Length: 99
Image 1 (tube, rainbow, N blue to C red):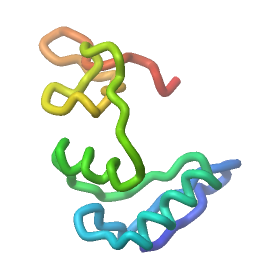
Image 2 (spheres, rainbow, N blue to C red):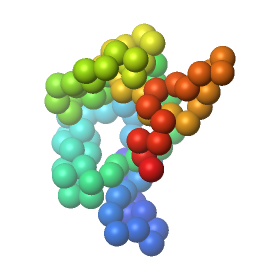
Image 3 (tube, helix red, strand yellow):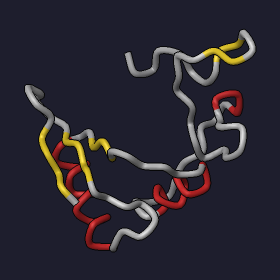
Image 4 (tube, rainbow, N blue to C red):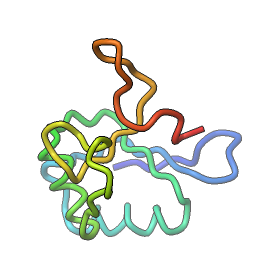
């Protein structure tokens, strides 16, 4: 696993070589500390199903379900959807939350 600071950024790191499906508790602890210290941690090249994504989140703590169900992922309510994508002419998730 390789953690690199974002170029020209005041905070945030990107992580390569992390395998969410087989990572050790030590790697998860390193990432947890990175979140506290750097505020944003981007895990590169992850191919996870929604259920695997939630399982990874559970390794960091207890995922919270957002109170408005219209913003839940269609398969897994623990995933909050923030998107600028339209599907069948309708918005998907909460628009512009990352603005």
